[in-house]
Length: 94
Picture 1 (tube, rainbow, N blue to C red):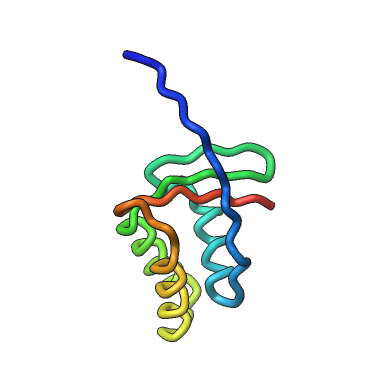
Picture 2: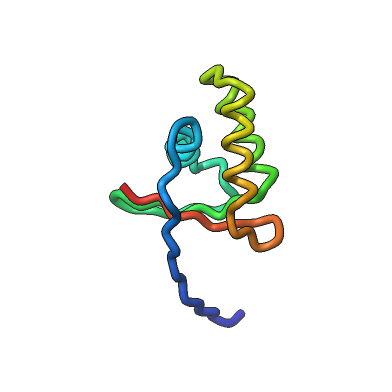
């Protein structure tokens, strides 16, 4: 087994507002459901599939009783992300 090395480059997105911003905090707090995660003191990296992301939207909708319009807003934001196939890696920093 060999050692692979890659370079990570972060392109920060415009900070979303409203329900999408709240959803991202939810996603960060519940990062353990991602396919892969690591983090330390104020930083979390997750690799997540579209299916897992959509599951988290449904959970967020259920837990916080947000409107269907807010769910659509979140889904539009998710669709606009630069997915690599069905996977994306996100960095949360606070």
